Length: 133
Image (cartoon, rainbow, N blue to C red; front, top):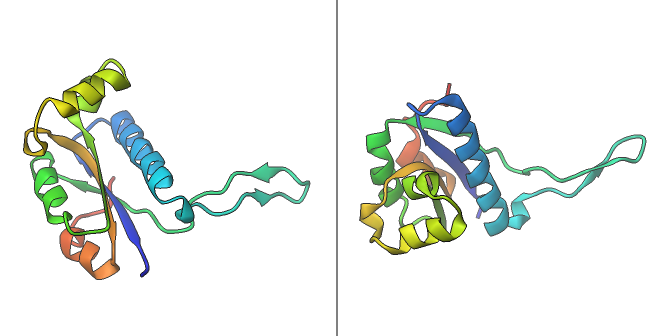
């Protein structure tokens, strides 16, 4: 199965937060699916550049109010990741973990999500969303 990953961000976030949240989700994707990271590539003068993604990774925008529903719609996909508001509010990873553990999933507010699965399934969920600007 060919995997199509897509990042969807709250379109109203400031540019810096959008970039940060997309980077965080990209790191999580690389950890979860290291097979999507290509091999290191040497330059002509033999400087090794670390591998980058071997698949396209579009970044889309959506209204903040839609992110929970999009995340829920992706429940049956092989991969769905979320950057929850708790991560932004936490002082450190231990605080983040405690905040996440303190409430059920529906009580958490995603500010960014990454979903991945078969192309048709992903397109059904987010095919109408525009590229982030």
